[in-house]
Length: 277
Image: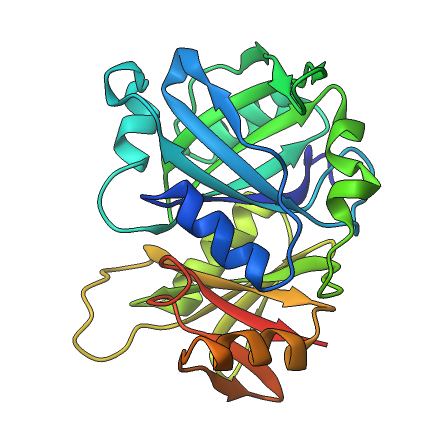
């Protein structure tokens, strides 16, 4: 049996320039978003799209993050929250952050020791909760990723927040592109301690309910070696007709792939979103 402490591909940290505009877009598509949460000490603000299909000590969500005060950004976050919008880090959940730190560093990932965080999360004008977790800050490897061990993951499972008007249940695939997709998939397989498989698109690694699909970069795109970049993700369960009708009313151009509705990154704040049954 594997002693790998990595439990799940937990969430995707996505950078948006205008959090209010991003929230309006996702709300119009039928998603429920958590209230705005400010982490003043770090100069960041976020809203979450939480999904109900979770397991063990892990969550499943898309984090929309913006900068509220550039002067307060820690170096690791200042490096991420700049430039083009889109997915900036894949966040793994751990059964034990210290064990995860040791194992990932043995693979050459170069993480600093875990940081314990407990912060106030104002969920309404009169109510606060206090999420608590051990965090490994993001590092650049084959992709940029980091991780956490939750101490009260139940805060991320409120039915009022995980129930979406469009029926969405989970994000179940992360899409990446690389100059050498099989090499990237092999490195991801090492990190996740799971086998990789060859696909018609490139390579795939699956951990629990979420698959990492690595495809070949388009000709002329610079992405050397096994390094990969995030393209987007697939949302399972959402009504393609409902989402498509909203976008059609906005005059937005979408596409289809394998029966799924595809929203391009240029429309969805740098993240290509595929809506599948």
